[in-house]
Image 1 (cartoon, one colour):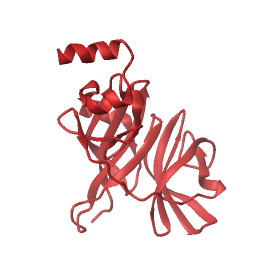
Image 2 (cartoon, one colour; image 1 turned 90 degrees about the vertical axis):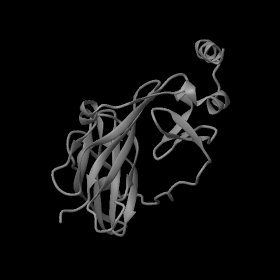
Image 3 (tube, helix red, strand yellow; image 1 turned 180 degrees about the vertical axis):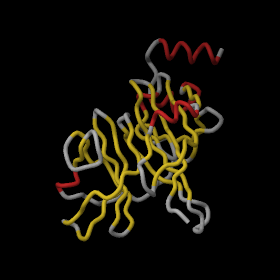
Image 4 (tube, one colour; image 1 turned 120 degrees about the horizontal axis):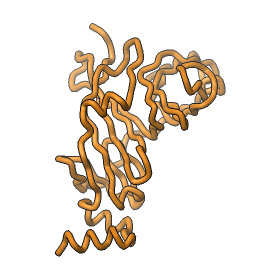
Length: 212
């Protein structure tokens, strides 16, 4: 009876964000295969870089239109949050998340070329994570995305430094999971992209921070 009711709601296109919050089974979640994972991103040449696909999930179904953000958690437009576990969305209490970066890059590195990691046009700055004078940043556009580093001497003097990965997909968000011990040199990098209307993907890679 429950399955039939949910199927009716989906087919009748009357699913609301509140219904989706109460019925996470309306979200379809499948794992991304290792072969698929290779197609989402191409590693940059030098460290730091990604060194292999780790895991990922594709989320689909009638409720995906209410997804506001995907990252460590999936957040809906009513701020209800879920984690992905065993190919399903599991509700959790809402958290505050990491503090936002207030870095605004100067004009010369606000945009980069769509076909290479260089100043140009086609991809525009989305967000960054800051570490002193270094900023790990995301640029995205219709022809794909890039994650790389910006080195700044001051607020007005910045340059593109290093490409971490390039993707043929339009990345909407990204983040890091640091290594569990400071002496370790590998962690994880994830990003979120929309594959097509009604289909979101969260993809994770092993991230090499430094060589020994």
